[in-house]
Amino acid sequence: MLENLPVETIEYRLSPEEQVCSCCGGNLHEMSTQVRQELKYIPAELKVVKHVQSIYSCRHCEREEIETPVVTAPMPKPVHSGSLASPSLMAHIMNQKYVDGYAIIPARKAIFQIGVPLSRQTLANWMIHVQPVVEPTL
Image (cartoon, rainbow, N blue to C red; front, side, top):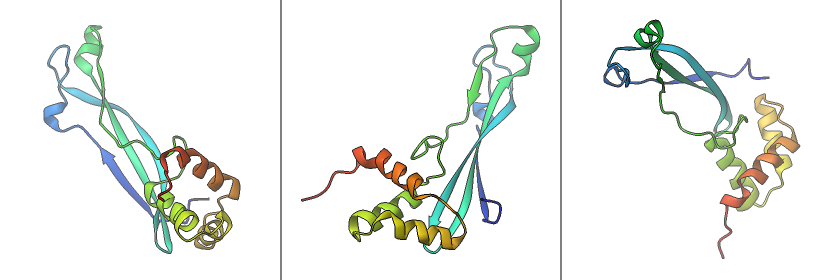
């Protein structure tokens, strides 16, 4: 469902100064990466943002069978773990629901027209997840 959207990739890496083994002082190598995708809302446009998080370890410690520290580059937390919701998309849906007074259906239709068939239930679940964070103003 996401293959026709433009993709923006943001990589989170440790600087060369941070790629030092805390056990032996040797150089860390990139062991693997973790990828998280979000749908970023730009008015009347959606694009995929890929968050690629590098994970490092020390080859020297691996070879010498010493304790092998694993270091992960810092990355911002998602709005809703395991979902495609980005802060911009959630802000748009919340604005339509709480400021403009629309139901979720018009937001879903607008996202669908851009090319992403998200269900009404998915959007409702996202709203339920962030509801404890939202405090109505009087």
